[in-house]
Length: 354
Image (cartoon, rainbow, N blue to C red; front, side, top):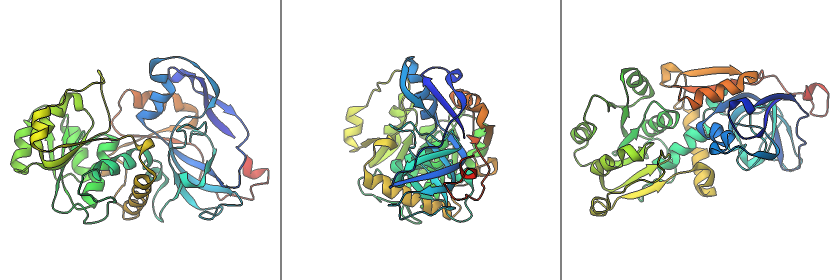
């Protein structure tokens, strides 16, 4: 099979296209023929070593997210059969088996059924962005623990950076759950994307006063802020958050430290929730996976420019270019076409491993 690997951290040029044997399927494992691999900022940051070049002990296949078809299952697997369409998550987190390869072998709990009618593109876009967004939107003290239609009815949510992948998913999930959604963007083109994603109010922070606009829309403040840039926005966030509201932070900038307005935060009993989807609890992750699957089945997490998130495609051999595009903050979702969605054959045949 074809696979992208790297044996040392560094620039995108460390990525190599190689031929290798598919992984062996253990009793509790599922082997997935990957059709589409999704690229997220976490993927290039892991590959870069956060600026530190080092040799790896084992070959690493990049990319956490993907979608495809079950090719083989272990004897203890009960949830999947050969031929099932699936999406996968966290595949390269503390593992060498990412989705930038034709087959990946994963423990059963990292594999999720792709609802009928949901495309591989959507499936490859769910993991990191949608699960991060779900945790941010459910981090309020008063819940809900799992999003569903109507679960955020009556509240106002502010999503910073609504044209990004996580911001896009947060808009879509919040709208699906019944919230009124405000989002901020950096220009008219991104404003069009945020509107297409379903945001009710879009604010161009370069030409408008965000605090004043939000106050006009939500005089008592917003219940949740999904924050991508706390260094730039936290002081304003504390002005806009409601008493007892939650500011969920899923990214940081440089410097890594951020100044917190303590007295103003105390006065409003603000909750700060830092979010890293890899290390959320099993209960939180399970709730997120089920909610995201339900939202996708309802058509609430579509991608493409018409849905607010343009898709930029690359073939597997150009994974380095795909990583570079995400590193350069391209607007849209970067996807890698890994293989055709063929019907699997018996896993012990030569054809299944081609």
